[in-house]
Amino acid sequence: MRREASARQEAGDPLYRGRFSDGQRHFTVRASSTEVPDSFQVYAGGDHADIVVIVSGLATWNLRATWGDGWRSAGEEWKGWLKDQAFMVFYNGRPPEAGKVRVCNG
Image 1 (cartoon, one colour):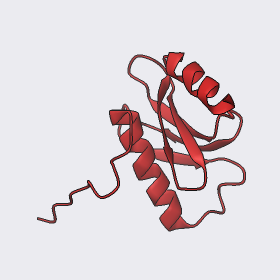
Image 2 (image 1 turned 120 degrees about the vertical axis):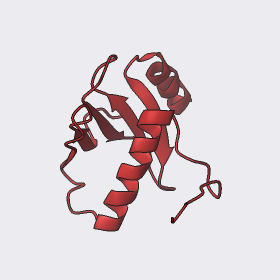
Image 3 (image 1 turned 90 degrees about the vertical axis):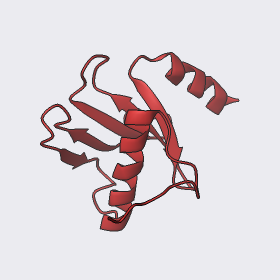
């Protein structure tokens, strides 16, 4: 019940962009502003204080990821996966469905 109430609150937030999961934890993506945001943040679960990463420089494409306490020590592969998922949610509102992703290599 608590998760449903949290999801309703987030959906009413104009900065809320969406959620995704790594199979163990849920992450929420939130823009820095409603119009032309220059950054977005990803936080764990429904806790705005547990910031996983802030990606800044969206307007200039001078991208920079700043990792939150407790997340800096995560492996590079996982960090890359998390950033990719967060970008998909930021721009599309949700990550791609499992098994529905196509990759063109040339």
